[in-house]
Image 1 (spheres, one colour):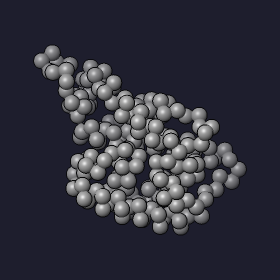
Image 2: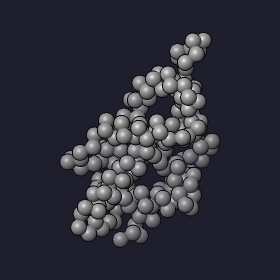
Image 3: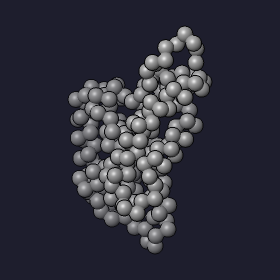
Image 4: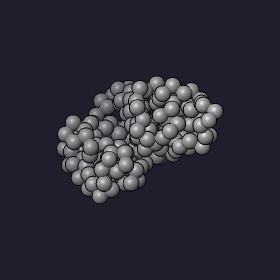
Length: 191
């Protein structure tokens, strides 16, 4: 870190400096982002079964390792946390797939979007079902899928989603409503 740079740089500035090769920026950044990433991890795990072996801290650490290795030009803090939330979702989906493979049959069952509450998924098969539906939505309309991920998996507000995706707050809200309706219809068709 350059001695002339102030120590109170924003998270966005630290992310940009870190991606630019400034290792000291990561040292300053890590404690600043830790609690937010932990909150996101806790949201991901809040609906898991009581026997869950993965803690919010474990999920956070595994996601952070992936974030350190990813080659992304961070736009801002919201973009970083959105990618962090997506990494956590991928980790949970991968674990759910592993569990499903171990179970005899591993068949999915019908789940409504309202029941799932997206971030509070009850079972591995429900998470897999939602993941499959979100991936399908992403093929048809990537922005709607991104809004769902940012709000439910990333914990971002409509204002933060609007900033991250460079859309208005009203558009973010409308995109989320449409995405939820599409997911509701799409998840109900799986059996």
